[in-house]
Amino acid sequence: MKKIIPFAVIGASLALSGCMSTSISSADADKLTADVIKTSFQDKGIAKVSRLEQDEANRLCSAADVAGKPLDAATAKAIEAAQMKTIKWPSDGVFLGDFKAGEKVAQGGRGLTWSDKAEQVNGGNCYNCHQISKEELSYGTLGPSLYNYGKLRGVADPASPASKAIVEYTWGKLWNSRAYNACSNMPRVGHNGILTEAQIKDVMALLLDPKSPVNQ
Image (cartoon, rainbow, N blue to C red; front, side):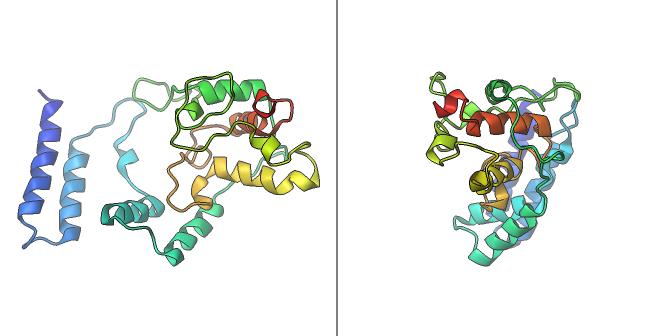
């Protein structure tokens, strides 16, 4: 019964705010709903209530989504510029790791739940949204297919100057996707600490190494 009450309370608060639309501002209604949601959750294991707190990019994108219209161009560019500054490039200047390890990261989906341990290595869960290797038949379509990712972009040698732009873009996109698309749905795996630098290098290799099965 305890699990049902919070959702019932949330529904009631939303209904209440709707009925009171003539006497309560939209901002007050949003705050009321947010307060009810916060009181309906509690810290459990490594999953903390603080995850409900939105950064500025999330707040602006959520507001635009609720309003049913895209962000204005100036706001979108401001978000992208701010997010670009958060990207941390490889500490040793090396962008690619082991593509075999990258496939394991892409396949892995565990991590960050209340039952996981803080020291546990997270998975990337990449196949939930993308086709990557043609050998894997189960994948999501929320994101574009990444099969032949490096091959289609002419990356014959990731270390060459000619490939520099696409290699850096791919790293940046993995680290913080909102640096390139203000309201991207792609998880910010580096920025939010979902994957380690080493794991991102391995996923980079999966996508860009000419020897990776992704590029065969």
